[in-house]
Image (cartoon, rainbow, N blue to C red; front, side, top):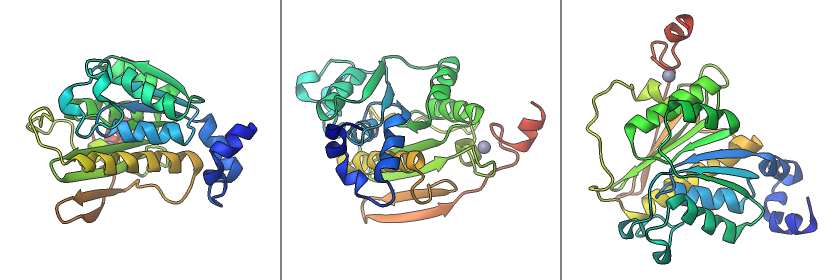
Length: 254
Ligand SMILES: [Zn+2]
């Protein structure tokens, strides 16, 4: 680390749990963030400020006036600009040392496989059930930990789906891919502004914990926040051996 880096990251280095070694791990890490909206904004800003060496940011959308109430990486001036470019500009303004790659596209399974395999940790910051399932399947295939967050109205939830230890559930163990959910479109739903900030910031925290090995991750636990009463509920989640994505039957059949 250079003298500038030692100063910039000094408040991490001062932590016994991180120190120089942990910060070196953060500098060497590559995080994939899918979605540069409400969750992706704080997640991307904190991961950039913390010095994650490489960040790949994926989103096909452009900044809209209705986004600005909660998507804090974007500005009034950048309405109409691609969200990935707008967010990258905000990230570089905080930390020009981070290598940021932007992809303005809606990624399919094949593109996801390539992107996930390159990254050490994946953040699902999308708001679309089908995309969430595709990201989870790619993370299971590549054995990459997935930090998935969601926020709508006054409700938020977050967990880590880590296929590496072998006995942790994946996203599909909990939310079956063939379930007939009514697609909740964020374009028509209300969202209490700080909810996405709370959950997106926690996603950044879990990603940094996974990178540095600090504490225990949220793997196997789903945290749910009721923002009206500001009450957290923790639910233990288990691997489903019949899960169509990570289940034993699926693995045996190839
Ligand atoms: Zn599963």
